[in-house]
Each structure stands twice: as structure tokens, then as C-alpha cells.
Image 1 (cartoon, rainbow, N blue to C red):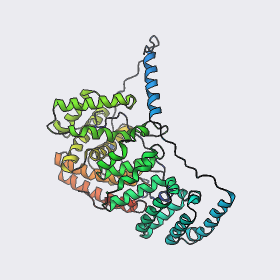
Image 2: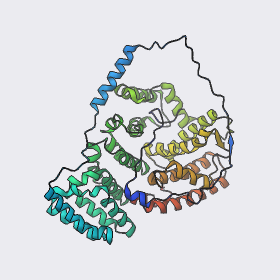
Image 3: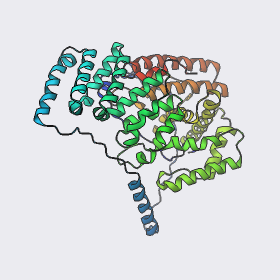
Image 4: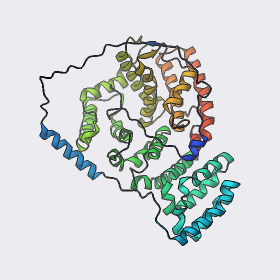
Length: 463
């Protein structure tokens, strides 16, 4: 499979919703639960049987295995993440009484009769008078999320952000306990308001504890990809991606490495590429593979030749797909070519162009998992995409807002690309555009209720 992803294998993200998200997210396809799609046909493919011969034995050099294992052990030790202390320090019985007394007052304005500004005032008062005890209020477990959710619903989000910045500056010992979530909110707020001047200062917790919260780190990666912020993304990942990769228990670690690889090779991606450019890509990937031999970086020269030909030299044509392998090859070719369209015609940085093209590739591949293919794969169907959104971007309850909105944006661009390439008619293009706009209106309204960062998609299409 010759897609532009240089790390072998498809990553699966581990997700865990915060409390406010759990309460506010909605299922986009709640009205389509009984929907049955008949616009597919079966495709069959002969599968090669694995030949097992008991007369043969594995003759792999045991010394090679030992050397590889030693190398991996060294890498894991070298890139071991700093431990994050999630539990506040122990306090005395008298100090606990101070905490309990504060909560008794706080419950009146937090649980019984919620008042955003009184909640903030009480927190500030405690920070000023008992700074050492603030972590023991355990505000990071629920209260801050509830305050954020209320401020979002009531239209007072600016006040929440001002409080959050104050809290970060004056009670960092408590702030850090939920800091990766809070910093994500601060970054999204600044992106929405067009202020990127000091965003990198909010990378500090992610960089000091890269293995602590992969969920919110992935949300931040998706946010930068979706909004064409390649420089900020590389600044975030360039020092920490090996630590995340070798951190035990994190699913989808390739998603943190791929942007680095893309950034190193994008200067060689051009229409007038030469054999020397291909050699440079291969040498770059070999250097990377030598540093991290278990990342399975693609170093085969033929792979890169085929990829660049897919991107620049072979223009996709309409084709009747007869089997699964043919469909996979065709869809990979189209999305590779689509990536160039995004970069050249829509001004997307290469990492964002790849992000959108992979979202489309995953969508096209989904029916193939069940040996099916849409009879008209480029004719968009609202109910089908509605169901795809709800399943592909599900996050315990509801939908992952930024990837979901990015997918609709990618579909819109893909529809433009298909028409400009001559793969669909004007009538199909107009119909598809209507589907994209309808789904965007629904999804955008849903996402606004739970994620301030969704406002980055207020303009549709983005360009």
C-alpha cells in the first residue's frame, strides 16, 4: 500500500472523555438508527492460503534477535518518560478541615445554585489564603470541567479563560493536575481568536510529561493538523515524539511520529522532482530508521518512486473496480493525488494535506473491510456519511469534534478535486456539495455545545 504515510501500519487512537464532554456531546445519527444502505455490492477476492511445512524450522540467527532486543531495550531506557505525580500531597487533619469547610461553602454555588462568578471568586480566595492546599481541593476531577461547560453554555467563556490563565499563574501546583486539558482549552481559545504569539508556552506540561496524557496530546495534534498549523505541531512534537513512541500502554504512537517524518521530506515533494530528490528522501528515511529501527519507517526506494508517481505523474481515471485489491490500489492512488491538490490548490501545508487525504482514504476503505464497495463510491449519501461519522469518530459518547469537522471539510475538498479531475459530473458535484453543507450545519451546531475550538470551523469551507 503506497500511501504517503511513512510509518507502517494504521494507528488506533485511545480516547477518554472528560466529564463536561460526556454530558454535552450528542450522537449525530440519533435519527438514523434504523438506516439500511443498499447502495453496496459484494466484491470477492481469492485469498492465498498460508503454507505450513513441519519439515522446516526457523533458522533466524538468534544473535540477531538478541542484538535487536538489546537495541530496543536501550531505546526504551533512553526515552523513558518522567513520572507524573497524579495524587496531591498528604495533608494533616487540621488542613483537611480547612478543605472541607471550603467545600461546604463552595457546594452552595456549585451544586445547589450554580453561580459561575461566585465559584471563581471562592477558588481565587482559597488560592490566595491557602496556596499549598489548593491541589487537595481536587478541582481537576470535576469542578473545573463543570465551570468550563457552564461558561460555554452561558456565553461567559471569556471569563472562564481569564480565570484559567490566572489559575495557571497563581496555583500551578493544582493546575498541573489537569493541565493538559486546561492548556488544550487555552490553545484552542487563542487559535479561534487569531492569537498564536505565545501558544508554545502552553506546551510545557506536554513536553515535561510526554507519556502522561496521550488523549489530550492527540487532541492537540489533531487540532494543529486540522487548522494548517504545521510549525506549531512540529514545535510541539520535535523533542517528545520518541518518548511518546516508547511509552508503554499508548495506542496509536505512529500518529505522533508521522508529522515529524512528513516535515523532513516535504521539501522534496514537488512536480519537477528528480532522482536526487528521491535519493534524499530514502537517505532521510534510512537515517531515521537507523535511529529507531522498530518504527518500521519505509526505506524502500521503489516505494517512494511509486508514491511520487502517484502524486504527480499518474492522473486517476474513472474505473470499474472488480475486486478488493484493485479498489485499495485505486483509492490509494486517488488520495495520494488528492493530497497534492490540497497543497497546491488549497494552500494546505503538507501535514494538513496528508491528514485530510488519510481521512478520505479511511472513508473509502471502510466498506472494503466487509468485502463491499459502494456502487457509486464518489456519490455522497447523507445517511451513509451520518452513520460513518457516528461510528468512526465516536468517543465513548458522541463524536470527536475536531476530527469529525475535519472529515466534513475533507469531503468538501475531495468533491472539488473529483470534479476538477473529471471523475464526477457537475450534477454529482452539486449534489455532493449539498450533502457536505447539510452535514456541516448539523455537526457544527452539535460541536459548539462541547468544544470552543469547534469555532475554528465557523467558516465553511475554510478556503
